[in-house]
Length: 79
Image (cartoon, rainbow, N blue to C red; front, side, top):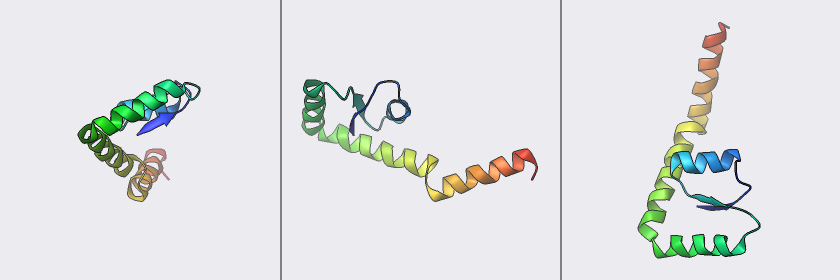
């Protein structure tokens, strides 16, 4: 994934942490284009980033993961 977003956002942190892609400043067309060209030229790496992105979503924000997070929170506060 190539995300054109402001640096320092949560999305940037997630992309870096998960290895699911790269982020570029939204106002830099040259860097964005270069990142897309790199992704196309390195399709195996892009596929691996896609796999890592899916794994991150399934682990952290899938319905099952969110439900487990709520159950853990409820258990922690003793409800």
